[in-house]
Length: 106
Image (cartoon, rainbow, N blue to C red; front, side, top):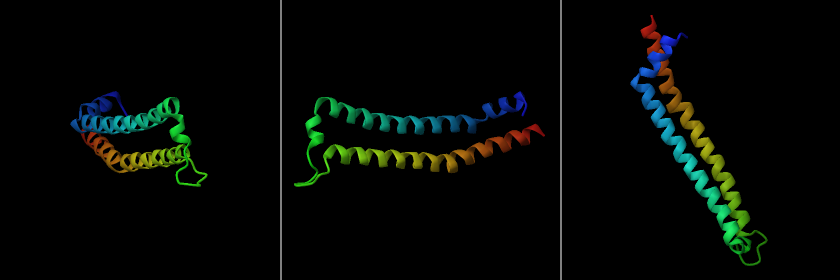
């Protein structure tokens, strides 16, 4: 692709929309992950006894292990959500942008 074609793609309003939507979505997911992770670290630092309690009476599973397992699974789910949205919505918009740039190139 030529640099002129890249410039046409960048000037396309759909490209600006793609960049904005993908950026908002990525920052939202990043904020969720960082809040959860650093929230957990702060609890470990300032109230570790709350994480050492058993989940139920007589249980060997502690609150900390249960929370960390939940976070591990939740982060995988967030990754799957991002991949699904990237493979459907973002890729479709990207294909439209490229098709329009090729049409203008001919």
